[in-house]
Length: 69
Image 1 (cartoon, rainbow, N blue to C red):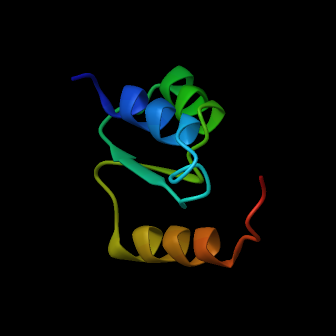
Image 2 (image 1 turned 90 degrees about the horizontal axis):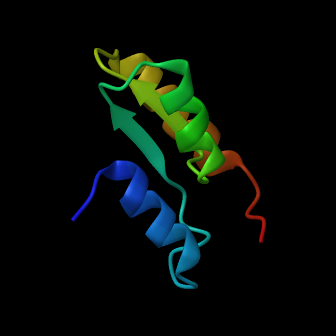
């Protein structure tokens, strides 16, 4: 159980998922939540409501980033 932040933290600690690109899509718009998500290792953070252009652009940007350990 837990929220998306908990799931993200668990995934980043797991060797199989540590390098998986992750974009958070959430209703949490508070700057502290955004910093938390990115600080836990999200590669992108999109808040609702969102446009398909923002979603597509964020995914394209994330997929173009080189993988780092």
